[in-house]
Amino acid sequence: MVSMEPIFLRIDLKEFLTYVRQKLAVEKSLLLLYIVVYASWGIMMDRFGTMVEIARFTYWWQIITVYILYMIPISLLLRGLPFYQQYAYGLVFMSLLEFGGYAIESSYAYPNNLLDQYFGIRNFSLGMALFFALYFPTGNWLVNKIHLKLFAAKD
Image (cartoon, rainbow, N blue to C red; front, side):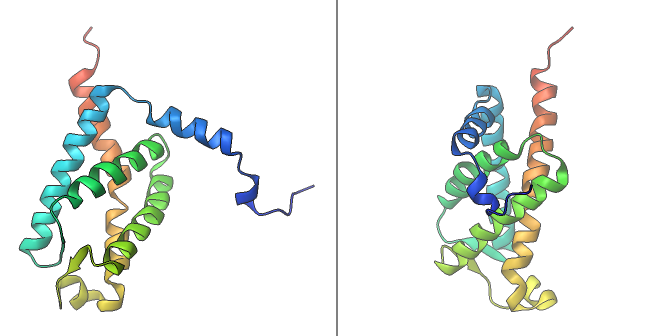
């Protein structure tokens, strides 16, 4: 018989925390590589968004809080899942981030930017979340490829 209780009530917290600890326990070289890749990515995207006047962070240190402290742990939790699952979960996490960033005005969207012009002002945050959710599967793939090249056992 199928349980009628909501799925979130059936989640075993101890099992979930074990999963989180296991996924976050990575080699120092891998973690350092994530930091270098994601920090570089964050700097480039913030500069690009500013240069073409789409959007930018309000404060420089948001690159650290968003790309390193928020996105890397999520990437590590999603690592190893199929692309579509990483993207789907990433979409949830990025939607929360985009909504929160624009709601508290820690992110700035330039008026009448390219996304507004093509998709409408009401779709800006959705477009950003759809795009940035790709960071999780793409970032995991990229870091894995670089890590294998740099640290693969030499025969």
